[in-house]
Image 1: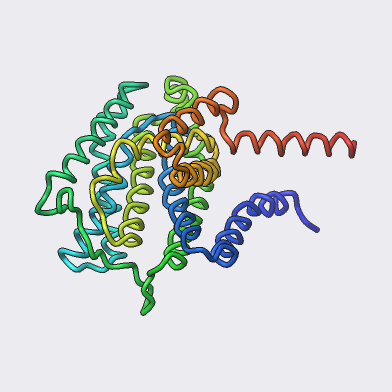
Image 2 (image 1 turned 120 degrees about the vertical axis):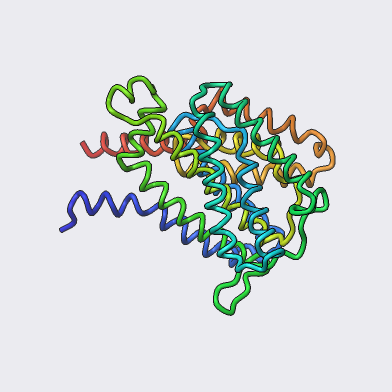
Length: 329
């Protein structure tokens, strides 16, 4: 006989199982290289947005500097593998540790700030790091960047091409989704939600507010760093352009559109906004109006769907369950 707990665990695992099936089937259904590369890009953006969801949606802290952490991961992998000939996986690990250390140093003072002061501080950090990427010519290659970055390898298999990189990127995304779900359902997740609602009330209940805020900031930075490393080994080239303020704002829009207080919102927002960006890029009539289109989408979601796509889906499912319960009563 199925116990209520076993049934709850099974139902809770269904979205992850659906994600795994979708990831496995995607390259088999869509055999076009362009579509597969868009799918890989959605995976990279989902990883960065997932960390931002934990930081913004659950802990209530805004960051406009995550492009810097994305860049740190990418440049760490690029420098260590091309200059020192390290193994790409080891370079990715060291990049994540380095990024986490930098995030801890940045987060300790900045996370004492609130509201727009915190956003401005992280914005300043992002701008500084992009200048470092440009001016650190001897190490980063300046505007020319770093080329010939080796791809990831598993045993004797080199992860090259869109399909293999798609599976490698989404394997990491699935693992991070599972880890994030465990985190938000744990005591730490409840503490983060308490901090989001009221730092004063959370502190009064014994929550170590400053420690939790720094820890989730470091975790979100590590997610961005891993995404940056995957990007570097996928594209095999890095330059300062992708790690600008525009990327940080793009990630913020993805989180808001997808729904910041739901782990699945990161994936939904990344899929919608990446597909929209690709469509705008292909349409000559509105190609130069992409910033206007993103701004319009953002305003529409804030006004009409403040909980994002994930929030709207959750409400819809709750309404269906309530109707079924009424019919069975």
